[in-house]
Length: 277
Image (cartoon, rainbow, N blue to C red; front, side):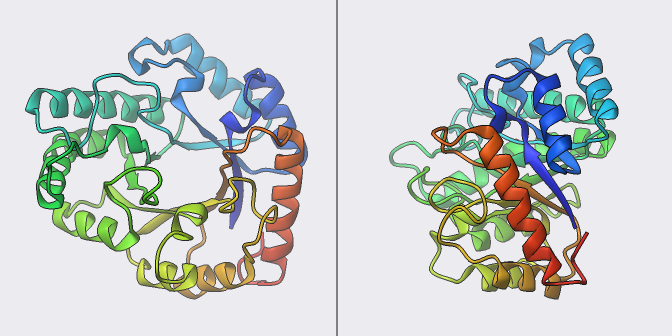
């Protein structure tokens, strides 16, 4: 099990300073929010990409993927009733897949609740069909770039589309592609009726990525969630990939979040030896 941190945790820090601190704190990897490079992915330059890759190599951090894919974008929406908008959204995701591969990554976490929110009057069935139409347009590019899109269920306070892990699993089954799988987030799972360990176990066949945080929007161990049952459930399903720290509370200094989160996760993993390390 490897531990990563999302780069926007460091807010307005330079990439060099953020990567240096993450490495010093003991992280294995870094997860990139594209807007930290540019709010328009089509404006991210090759020079920027090369600089970030060089920094990751310098600090021995693996860039394995992207998240917050559509944050700060305009006129993009996964469930839009307008085909032109869905095509534009698909084109943007394809561009991100290209960037992900250039950075050395293989994974893109699709959260972006505002850019998948269903308009008033749209049924869940219509929203699903529109999302499937949009994502289907991306599949050839995902395959070309060897990138997997990980759908992220989010709680009802975030929006009205893809609210549960079960919903995500159903969409994945309908797409039927090895390049679209499931991402789970502790904060989001805390809004579901089922327990977090039971959600993890039910998602065994689809789960490819995991965000560690707390319902209070802070890092793991900085709130009420006990990770012991979570780690046990991950061990039971054979998950051996990334635990990536993602937080939303900007009141906590990045240094405190980074250090306390990794210490907590390492201690939790140490209590489950088959997952440790």
